[in-house]
Image 1 (cartoon, one colour):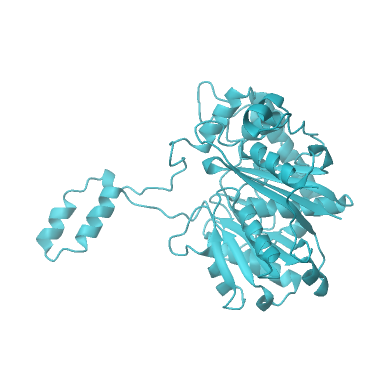
Image 2: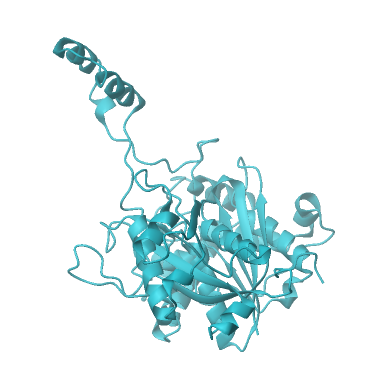
Length: 435
């Protein structure tokens, strides 16, 4: 028995009764004109319709986005206002980089555990296509000064100080603020440090696409993905558009390294692409779910978050967070039916898999006398992972939760681990259970 119990004071568990997502679309494709807030409203509105629950019963919405929209900084509140919920519904937004919707789900679960709500919605949405484009610091300062001038001479005096370079737009940063390193550079470092070869990375990418394609063809994914009609409403999208249905391992070898052109092994093909999409889950107090006659997908049994340094191995969060969640719940790796790990990069995923099995790493970094354990790859990312499906940053956690619960149910129940790395050296791990 572990030290963590995800239950109310009356001993009721936190149930997940619904999960849904939009199709995930590569940057600048089907969702090229759809901002994150609309992706969020789209998926929550459809989930409410499918569950046939009165929107007024929702007591809390916790949602997130990683690429912030300055005009709608509280995406959760916009979702409440745009989906017919009670205007008094509590709504706030969170961000934990790529683990954002795990954090959102935990926040709702903790509200249920505290007895302040019975029903809540958690999730995330991100658009890599509709981005807040900034301006240079010099242009921003001059525009501010310009707004305070009174004469044409003053205006011209300010404008002549600007060069063409100052007028160039500034896209959102893709690097760590504290180090200047991109996620891809960190993945490259992890590949070199932990001896992850190019062939191993390409093989994992091929596996991810092959399993995801197979899952779609076998009808395992369709029910958790809505059909979307994005602007300008001339066509619809009902499937993820990044999956390579004709994947061959030989095809991956043709791509050049993306971050270290001379000696690197991380490529666009063995990494997850920039993606647009949204995903959500509905959580309830167990008794409330039964009272309303809701089908329970499963339960949250435990969770943990981790934080490590960003200079090296920044994407090792799954190993650190998993060690914590297993200790919290009193479980061993061998107790798990399924393990679903976010694939930001094949190098990152494989480095974590390797460190799961390392006694040395456990003793030096995790405060454990022995390794977490060697992952049985027959349990690992059995429906493919983020390399294939894509990765709208804030939505991935909710995708993983829904996908895992439904797969556990198909297998007759069990216990599963969801885990993800995140920018800033963060990590998340969640234990899900289906009876």
